Amino acid sequence: MSEVLLISGAAIEGRERADILIEDGRIAEVGTGLSRAGATRVDADGLIALPGLVDLHTHLREPGYEASETVLTGTRAAAAGGFTAVFAMPNTSPVADAAGVVEQELALGEAAGYATVQPIGAVTVGQKGERLAELGAMADSRARVRVFSDDGFCVWDPLIMRRALEYVKAFDGVVAQHAQDPRLTEGAQMNEGVVSAELGLAGWPAVAEESIIARDVLLAEHVGSRLHVCHLSTAGSVDIIRWAKKRGIDVTAEVTPHHLLLTDELVRDYDARYKVNPPLRTAEDVQAVREGLADGTIDIVATDHAPHPAEAKACEWQAAANGMVGLESALRVVHQSMVATGLLDWRDVARVMSKAPARIGRLAAHGTDLVAGQPAELTLYDPSVDGVFTQDDLRGRSVNSPYLGSALPGRVMWTIHRGYTTLAAGEVVELQAVTA
Picture 1 (cartoon, rainbow, N blue to C red):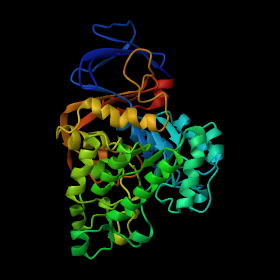
Picture 2: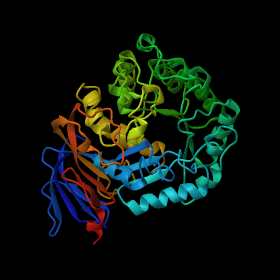
Picture 3: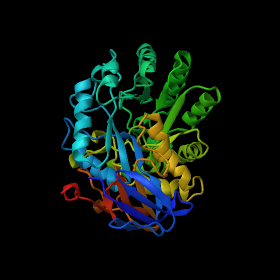
Picture 4: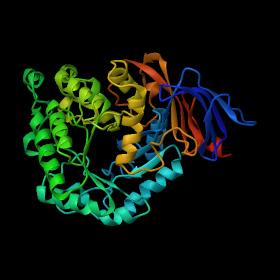
């Protein structure tokens, strides 16, 4: 399926311009004035070349919830957003808590061909928090799982969390925690604060996130294991992660694009597109997580892409499902919230959206520098254009995006995965045409 491609004049990570020759699925040469007979030429003048984006937190819904998304539709959305690898969360049916399920997910990703699909295994059986899942079997399976999470369920029992952290050390794994104390968030509908009080909605307090993070970094220190904090959302959480890193604890953290841009003020219209877990927080929290990402306290941006069928959002607020789709919009939102504000440059974007997530997930073929000999996984982005984000920009099965009708900068123009194009001139490629 690999092509011979000659990308001409791209700004490598937003800096020096160069040509990139791709052959046999790898970068063959990087330089100026390159030529190759028979190569497909991509004019990248004005485009930024980034290592293919890697999302450590994606919901692909298959098996079991194909009405919302499938591996095929989800990875087409990933290609449209510049992603060449996604980590698939385990909240499927059956839950990805055994080797057979994660191997099925891996095979579905290979068959689709749009991105590397790396399964995440559940920490506990059925994500019920009662006993550890088959962590070792999933790690030894063909899927070679290295990230484990109960996803939308907090591993609340400290003894089980300790045992999980101890267990994954044997194969250099990491436990990715959804930090939410369930007792402090019973019935919660949005961020606890001024807006929730005015609307009369049950609040989700910041301390419910922060207390779990504080406990878990201490557990990780105690057992000498790796901890990853999913979708961090509060100023206090940033402070705890900053303290833990200064102490030398092996902890990493992610923030979503929507927590970098949107606030709980949007809930005033009861538009369920803005209902998400953890909830949209205050403007002060948004500023704090931006600063945390800029100074390296927060390691990565992860989408928490969470597709839902229309009926799950077209209802009253209290009955609506939590979650937003985010693969197609992620890079554009990071551009707006972090690059346009001067907090990050494009080399930083490459780090937080490709290199660091690949490293945390131990995905060796992704997140590499754009130099000769490396796998041909890259994204070409046009930062000079802007436009209104519409349903036409979505390539997945669900349309529950919070950005519909909003102006966003930039556009992903090309995505190249394993040396072949999955997105060309802004349009998702029909891969059977490539393989013919």
